[in-house]
Length: 240
Image 1 (cartoon, rainbow, N blue to C red):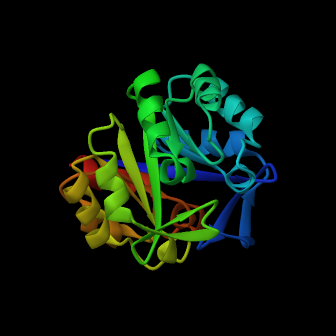
Image 2 (image 1 turned 45 degrees about the vertical axis):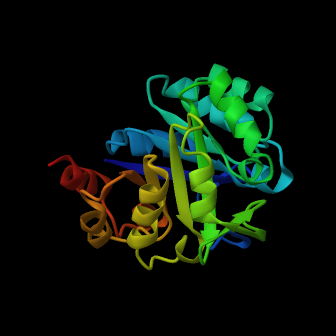
Image 3 (image 1 turned 135 degrees about the vertical axis):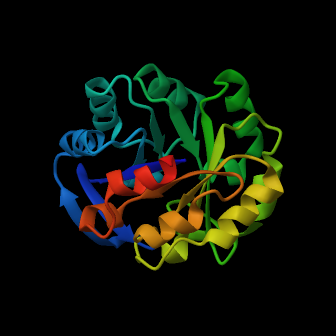
């Protein structure tokens, strides 16, 4: 299992939001490349980047920042989400050295786009499912749909998706603990590896997720930035 540090990009800075609200942000750094290097030095084996402005705009805004991080850490697996709505954007990121691209809003509106992306970029596509009370949210979580998270996950079971990032919006950035039951349940219905996101707070969450079927790892943001979770210590627990 992998504990994956999150670097959320807003206006060129590293921030953390609460429940996806752009107006409720905490700035942790104005140097995303240095932040990435810090987490690599702390033992990160993968990074999770989110272009928050891109998610709302529907097109990448922080391409240059992502490219800079990939250039400094060419052997580090990087996954990027936010505003990825075209095959050209996916190709650009992969050419820049990114390992995985996360398709969220587009996966809800045009599921066939995910299938096309998986065919063209096999092994590099992750579907991001962001849910509030079990219902999928899109456009930077601004809109809650009538699509169930489990139904969307099942839709891509045989599409060639590398994994699913499942975010419980209600818990994201709130330091209230990860939603283990929903995350494990999602993995069970789709049969795909799932990365938990939202609510990771301390070592209790690490122990709760350890050994759970179908869980590839978890994304952590506010907890490692505010110091309630030590990246090296947490990863060591999963490595045993």
